[in-house]
Length: 347
Image (cartoon, rainbow, N blue to C red; front, side, top):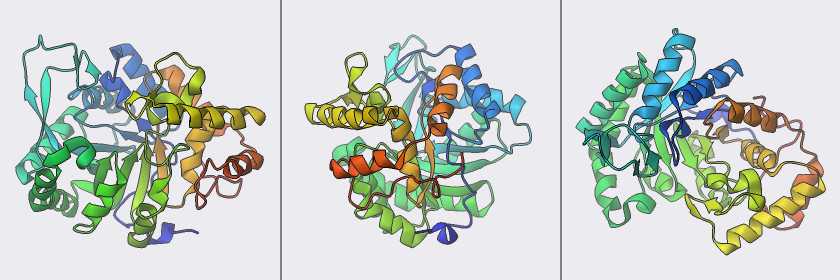
C-alpha cells in the first residue's frame, strides 16, 4: 500500500527521523543550556532535518533554545520546524515552583489554554519571535481531547472549530505556515476533528507504538482516505521502550508509572528482541515507520549522546524473523505492517 501520492500537497515532505524538542524544555529534569545547544547541533550535524517544539515545553524555553541554535546553523531556514498553538503564556512570579506541569526550572510563565482565533494568532506570533523564524512550517493545535480536558473538552473543541481553526487556515492561506494539523495524545479526537475540518498532518504521541496499535482500526484508514500524514511522537511510550523493564524504577508509561499489564507486555517484547539480539529501543523506533501514512517519528533527545544513540538505533539492522515472532506471539495488531528492507524509509 502506498498512499503517498494522495497526501496533502501543502505539507512539505517530512524526513523519517525528526527531533522532539520537549526534552530541551526541561521535561521532568533540568537540561543545561550547553546540553540543549549540543543536542540541537548534533541533530542538525547528523542530518536530522525536522525539529518539533511547542510553547508548552518549558513555557517558551524549548522554542527559545531551538531558535538560538537554528539562527546560527540554519539562517536560510531550510530545516523544517513545527510548533503548536492552543496555549498562551502568561507571566508569573519568577520564584514559582521549580517543577510545574512536568517541566523543571522552566521560564516564568504559566500556560493557559486558549483555542480562540485571537489566542491562536497570539501564540503563533510569540512562537515566531522565540524561534526567530520568518515562517513556521507546520502549525499544530496542541492537546485537544478528553484525556487532557475531561469535561471541558466540548467547550475547548467548539472554541477551536469556531476560532482557532479559522486562524490556522488563514495563516496557511497567507503562506505564513506551510501546513496545519493537530498535535495530540489520543487519536479519537483526531477523528472527531476530521469530521469538521481539513488538516494536512497529525502528530500523534504514544498511540502507535510497539505497545499499542489501536490507531489502525479507524484512524489510520481515515488518514489514508483523506491524505493526512501522521508524525509519530513518543515512540518509546514515556521511556519504557528504551530500557525495558530492566531500567531503574519507576517504569513510566504514558507519563505515569506503568501498570502491571504494560510491564508484562514489555517483558514479552524484550524476550523476543533478546532472541534476535536486537535492542528493544531499535524495534520501537523503526516499527511505526512501516505504515504508509506515517511520515516521521520524533523521539525526544536531551543531549548529543542521545542524538548519537538515536541515529544508531535507526541504523540497526532488524531481521524479519523478529517481526514474525512478535506477530506469532500476539504482540502486534494483525493489520500492522512491519519494516522490510524494501519498505524501510531512508532516514
